[in-house]
Length: 440
Ligand SMILES: Cc1cc2nc3c(=O)[nH]c(=O)nc-3n(C[C@H](O)[C@H](O)[C@H](O)COP(=O)(O)OP(=O)(O)OC[C@H]3O[C@@H](n4cnc5c(N)ncnc54)[C@H](O)[C@@H]3O)c2cc1C
Image 1 (cartoon, helix red, strand yellow):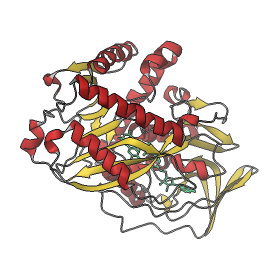
Image 2 (cartoon, rainbow, N blue to C red):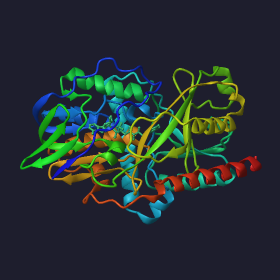
Image 3 (cartoon, rainbow, N blue to C red):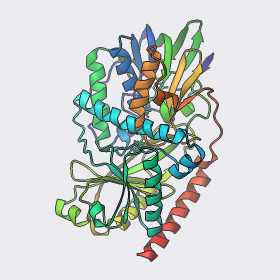
Image 4 (tube, rainbow, N blue to C red):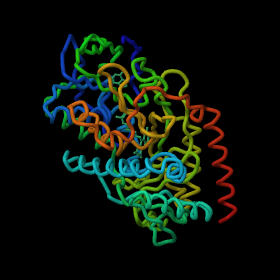
């Protein structure tokens, strides 16, 4: 196998979660050899690299920009056991698999919590849980049904309603995921990076992999300044994989997600909204809205509109119209906070998959992949990174790896993630909002 790719554009504007990095690792120059080369330094790649090094495997991490440049530093920080897709459909059509998937997602949260502790990462983690919240009575009853389904499958969830739920007043209640909470994702990514760099593992930043070629028992990774000759390669390039010819074709559909952050909100004003639980909140729209408080007193909110890429992935500044639309949503859910100004907005690429589940497997001899977390990778990406590392280190396939493992790297087209379908989703959501306003 020999496949080449042009390197992605590297300079996306960063977020407010952490200060810009000042100590990038030098790029690769010349040839190096290793047992395993990991491509991509997000949660998946950094956790896999760390685990392999801990297990005594000679590992090299190759990152196109800097570790944490992608979704891992840009996300909203909801640590959840959510599985994308409708749990009712899952439990009806995949009776045996549904409990296994829920177990996988629960274990993923446990893993990330343990990772935060092991790293000693000061990432403002609050074990508040998250709520899939209802705006209408119809949604509330649906939430009650889904809670029952999830509990039957072993999920640690609870149906909550009324003011006792500690949710902002606009929300009637919903499904409280007891596991997980909210954290600063940029600090978590930075903690992982620091642990790797200080452990002496070879990390090459500003080193985009441009080709991956199988040569007998070796896999050669070409980069602009040199070559890695590895026994095996793990692709951990998530949404960016779409543009890489050596990753499985059509495995992921990248979507641009925008987030916004307010200036700090006066604590009394925040409490007056009814949001005393500090749980992260997401809505049950076709394209969800998410809201969470931060340690600095601001509120981070987002999604509502997602955008399909036009051309190659890379630099993108938040679209003013999208930020305005997000702000309209924020004002609708938090009318008493209309006067709170916005501090900043940013965005990032998530990787959706046709099955709405992450995908892991082998794409060529000695070339493996772990990708596509459908916007839920804060828990799932580190966990699958570690499980893939154990697999590459020679362990039998873990049950939680087996449940998402693909025997064949073949993927169906995903028309749902094209621009027309996304616009339709947004329009349905706004019609629903109109209905919800009338019901109030
Ligand atoms: C705005 C936003 C909000 C989100 N909110 C949440 C949330 O609240 N909760 C949740 O669970 N998840 C959330 N997510 C999803 C979550 O952040 C991701 O699923 C997770 O970070 C994926 O990690 P990763 O390591 O697989 O990918 P990434 O962090 O994207 O890392 C991929 C890395 O690969 C590198 N790369 C690309 N091409 C190459 C190449 N050719 N050679 C070498 N390296 C390369 C990139 O530079 C990048 O650093 C959100 C994502 C976004 C964008």
